[in-house]
Each structure stands twice: as C-alpha cells, then as structure tokens.
Amino acid sequence: MFAGEFRSGSTLYARAFAPAAGVDEDPATGSAGAGLIGSLAQRSALSDGEQTLRILQGVRMGRPSLIEVGAHTEGGHLIGITVGGFTAVIGKGTITVPDR
Image 1: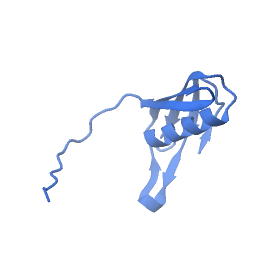
Image 2: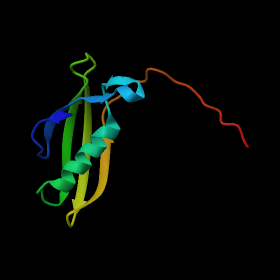
Image 3: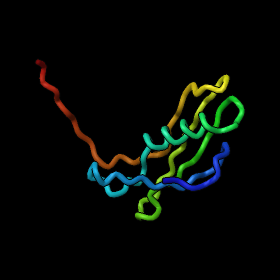
C-alpha cells in the first residue's frame, strides 16, 4: 500500500505486508519499491527521462526506512530501474553450496 503524489522528486509513504510468507510487515522493501516506480512510470503521463521517488516505509512499526528509487523511460517505454539507500550491516554469514 502507498500514499502520496507521484511526481518526480516526491516522497511516498508505503507499507508492505506479507503474512503468508511469515512477514507481518516489512520495514524496507526495495523490490516492492522497484515494482512500484516501474508500474507508476509506465502508467503516468510523465515525459521521457528519469523519474525519482523517495519511499518512506516502516514508520508505523518503529523502524523507519528511506528507499530511493528511479525509473528511466524512453519513447514511452520503461528502460531501467534503480533502487538505493543507506544500510547498516546487522549480520554476516557464508553459505557453502556443495558440488554435485
């Protein structure tokens, strides 16, 4: 779910729920942000070029996150999407996949 005005440079407020996947609410969902700006960019009347958004998420659950997303369109077609923001390492690990 999201609220706000879609115009390049604006900030949207979003919430992401996935209880079927064991996630009651996600405080920062970059993949959802990519899908959101891609969908909005394809459906909007904005001119070709780069559109950017800030997505504020996780506020209600006490874990505020700011995700920056961008969409590039040319000739009315979506060409590329970027997702970014600042992060903090909270864990580290290694996974070993055996040869078959």
